[in-house]
Length: 68
Image 1 (cartoon, one colour):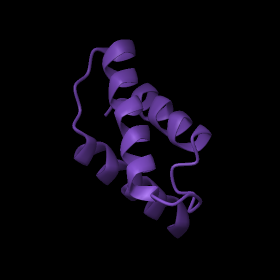
Image 2: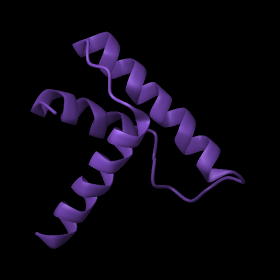
Image 3: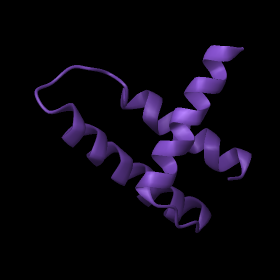
């Protein structure tokens, strides 16, 4: 994943409060947010990434930030 793609993904997830625990159905909310990320990356960069790949990348980024 190129740096600018990663910045775009992180920006969308932070703005949408992806890891927030509010609401009745947080998994449904997270799925909708991830669809927005997939569409944005495809539209802006022409890259097709699966939701699972992006979820894994996001969790890796969070773990990396915590350990620093």
